[in-house]
Length: 207
Image (cartoon, rainbow, N blue to C red; front, side, top):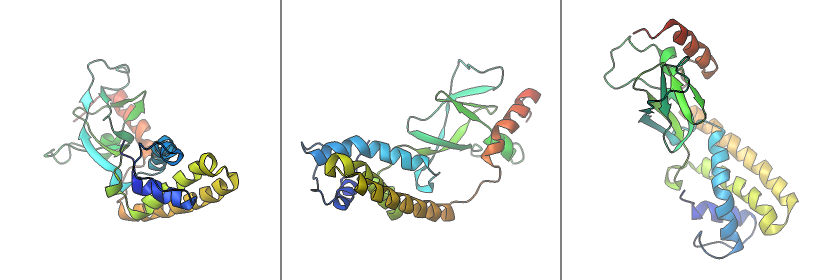
């Protein structure tokens, strides 16, 4: 994972700690940024389906389907997948042959995605996001989250950690609201996906 020196230094600035020039340098600041940055990014990415983190990729089908009695197809997830969103129709698909609720229906278990659909293409949130594609509010939220994690090992201050956690939560909420306003909503709620998929599975695949 590429660690943003800019975001690390924003976090360190909140602590009034020394800035770093390289994540590999032999300082307590760099060592703790390297330790906590990946987890802070992962937690923030998992909080919301960020539009800037969205990727689309065809899935590799497995020859061995551990749940073949329930799901017609088993797929490996992309290596950079953080959160699966939905399955999308293939390019050039025939209109009317891909009902929306069927296309979105899937479950993820033990790193595998199960669906009734052949040739699945997944829309997902990526786990490794470069600073260059992060909106400013997201970068700020990440910096505050990182600063909160660094407060104890660098400043030995749980009081400062608590204050920074509050700021991180506020900034994350603003970033989520801003991103939600930019991203179109899908028609079928994810809460119905497994129910729809299993009902299709019991009835068999119908084109």
